Length: 344
Image (cartoon, rainbow, N blue to C red):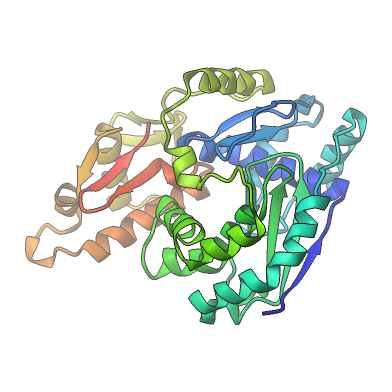
């Protein structure tokens, strides 16, 4: 199956990558999903490490607040021209190294047709929508980031870190074409969507096709990488780096002011009374499972109307409200067959 792949690198794409990572740092996405943010000169790379340049961001007025407001739900990201230019200026002065991506570009050029044909066998309807793949090679960030393909899109955009290989490209493509349906129709969480991609890349017939072209790899499935035993030293180094960059490390993001839920001691906007009640319940039981039955007590006074589907939709709306208030919806985690847990 022939789908064109274009590789694009520029200071512009790297500046936007910095802003994208900064946003995920501010809203807590990396911390709640067990990623360690560390300086760019780190020698050890892995799938749970986010490489971020140690730059004087204080020279950009209210940089972190501006990054927090950037829309990263689509790629290329939608950022104010001024902040992009200001970050580009920092990168120019610090002489950010260019990514060495020619080997992976050559490898993907040889493998792409065969692998995409195999993927088309596994997910045919989704592949009908792909018109082009654009890869932004980078020296920073997570292993890769990508847009979620919707009905209106035909291009998959991927930020690919220079130390990654064909496995990461394929994982990004799979997740891009399956995540929207997984979220909207199957009510999957971020981690459940990642599991689907991890399994297809490592355990399906696709794995054999990839291994034919990628003989040696440092690839580690995303969930395996982020759910491994927590590395106390890396966590300490990451926390110190956050502080050096001027980002507060709050031990507790959520709190109650009386009976009113707050984020970082600030009121949460636009919550319905039901959403406030459920969030208060989650905060009161932070880091412990709140069962479906307990949540149902707020949603269905009449137990005869109990609906797991309605609970799932309510929690998803609550996650969306958290995102709108500048915090990652991933703080509310699903425990299949049991209930929900708020990481705090």
